[in-house]
Length: 66
Image (cartoon, rainbow, N blue to C red; front, side, top):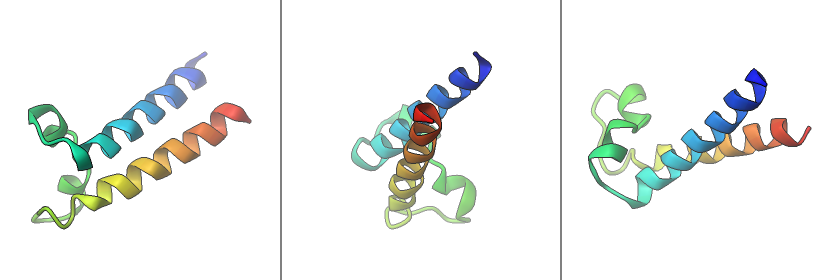
């Protein structure tokens, strides 16, 4: 049961990271992962959220279906 919670949580966070690229509000700005990786995050580094979000969704989706 705990594995299912972690898997679904990872998929949801991946979805939030994808939304960060398209929506700019206070909620999505606090969850940007590029702000943790890159010293000076800009609009150009915002696309890292899309890549990492899709990787999270894919990995957790594969774990969910396996």
